[in-house]
Image 1: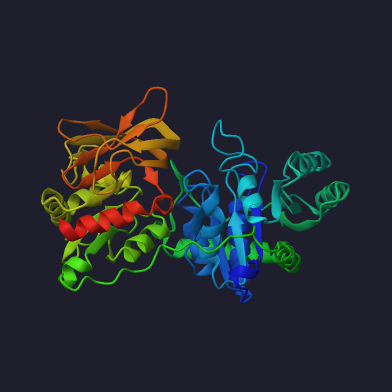
Image 2: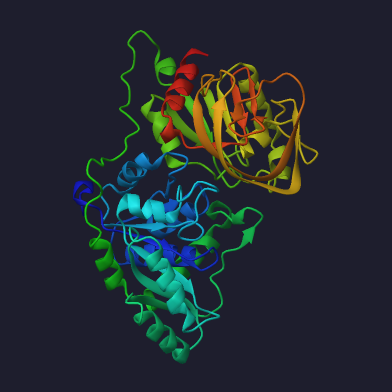
Length: 462
């Protein structure tokens, strides 16, 4: 194993555009290297929650996100080292095209920026299905666009035949970039999608396991694994001063408090309906002194005994609206906790679950609001400021977040807004009422660890 201080061997898997096959290659490479006995650290550029689930299946380790917009460029290296601690190699899957980042923000949050921050070589996955010699111009353009981005090799995807492969290799050789793999045009590995991307691992069970195994076999057969590992080992040390991120020390119990109060139990929603959660959130809650327990709103009929606070992240409640609505016991348990004033933090799917209804089906009724599916996709990074004091953030707290949903919430009266967006229209969004903080905005708490500490302290005192 390699110490983080000496530089974890690492690769970034990128592509000229979405749909080129980088998820198949990245996940397959993780699985193939794991199958060879290496401890592989999986990472994903950007806010995506779904791909890390497949990465976790491939490696047996938690998939972690690296997002320079949500967390700031200064945290990319430390968060990477935190996830890669004790691993032999790290594989980072990019987002969109190599140089695509936050709209109107230059390279910010792009795969290229993360690769530079990590000083990691890039492997470019090229969909070669409709080109031959032109691939040279494409690769040359990506290699020369930013001299600080080191493209160490190319993997050619969707290659039709031996003759096609020969033409492609000759073209890429003229650019001076090695071909590190060739994947033939074949029936795609089964990774079904719907309105917000791939179907999460938690919903697919053994089918997801089979899909990841097939990706691993495909990459092992078509790629030069030894050359890829050698390229990763040539990455060298991270920029000076980088140290692993830490959620902080677990605080010592105050002797005058009961165990229940000094170590409040925080219930975190999980299961197939609520799969969107960053691993660092639970780590921050635990470091702040909470006992973190997971429950499944599709199966559990009440909250875990002794719950003092509740965190409900994102996911697909619209897909499971009938089952969530049918679990009346849990809906009542959630409503009773919220009405008691206990801290509740809900993001996106969690917000919908707390509404009176979703597409006409009864939900928890914590908020005077109704939710429905919409044809319109709301997508993008947001720069936000807390406009109301809540269990999660004090008024004036600035955080960056990400919205990604096809639902609309129609609010009633009573609750104050949670966030004000720093946009020309100064839009406000979300709900703050009693101990509840509910919003469409997905945030990464590592950027503002005080929110976890504040939440746990409110759990102790509520």
